[in-house]
Length: 247
Image (cartoon, rainbow, N blue to C red):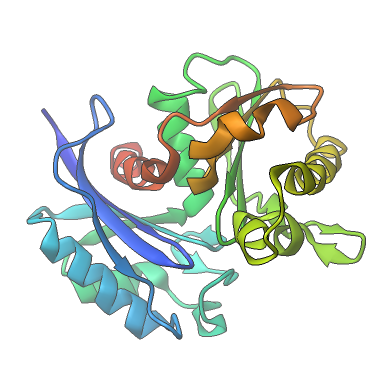
């Protein structure tokens, strides 16, 4: 068994566990702490180090996600974390905090790795779009199994407003939307995404996917839509898998 540490940073929580990267199974309990407020680089880095220590991990390389565009280790955007992250060398920051090499990537891209390797996208040959609905809306796109990184479709502007402001799981909760009301907004987002992409499969993820049976039949797309396999664990698993991808 080959294990690696995966840490998933979200707008409300930072989660981590050791993962068997040959099977995608968590080999330790998931550790979760609240994301600091404000979620500055120093505060988040300290929390990531806390989660890493709590898992009992002692390796030399770990994977970590951020709700941001990450290009060559540099953080280029900041969604649901403090704006001071922008243009930070995220790898250098986290390596200093944890004392190990880090593979840093976008949170939805990590979730996509998990679903494509072991979950709902496994063996899918065409274009796959993973959407994660949580504090925001994340996206990852795979073509013939290869990732197109940092797509960030949740920031598309629809009717003058970013999609994740009105159609995220947070919006559904904050506005007490029924699933009928929320699904109508999600369908507008999916339709907009489909003007850019022609996916063969859409994987519906994020914490709200555990309630997929209540709204799945309301979702509309030219593509097949299926619930994610790993839900809130996908980012952890994908972050751990990314350490293998980088070797």
